[in-house]
Image (cartoon, rainbow, N blue to C red; front, side):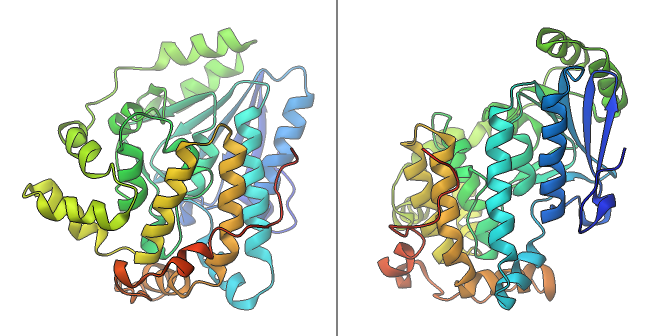
Length: 354
């Protein structure tokens, strides 16, 4: 069946296959980037699947050949912020609540992280009980490059692993493949992308959580090598600091090719976003609940909509596509404590009770 959305009905396809509830993200030309209508469709699908005793598992997939989901529709967020119509805030409110719901969903959830998995697409997939990557997986949290910060609970899931791999991904926006996603604990299984239909068929016949796990195990294969592995000792050492300036100084003092490449990458990011991101990650590392991280990130979104770097970053990446953002302030040391503090208000609307 097709789900019903008051914005774009065809953007989300919700189906039943035997004992499987299947959610297909259906904006392939936009790399399945999320709209508010899609978030609402998915939430409604979860309502139906949770209430249906004949559904044993839920699978999330992306339509088209290029990606699972490239994130939220950032152009729509940009336009909403400019217009002051509240859509961006509604989107983030409902998206973050959906992410938390997936993390707590009582039935097995499965995400096929095939192709591009970025931003909001990570939020839809990383909280699933079974997270499957493929040879086509391209995973990233690239928000510092558009004047934003890694959200959808990134301050939770990028801080659950030992070492500084999550810090590296959050600050640099580096795109990594299946081996690295698994090595960082952000996926559980590797499967060839051409086994998608076999996965749907196997899950449709799985009647309980044990059978779901067994069905997935029969289709998986050893993961490819993690390309970051040779650099992980350097990452853990160079990104261990609590100030971005200290990380940059450590990179500048290191004469390796990796340090030079990483410095060049960081130099293209919004200085304000780098500061905010690192503070969120360090606070997230001490958190004991995903919801606490989502609360903090949602509180920071008001400052995003008031941040000139967000509009400039989206202009440079999505609208004009000149890849030449002019950040304000332009340097790390020009970002004041007040600039950073605006993202951490003492009072804000709460997403969750308790």
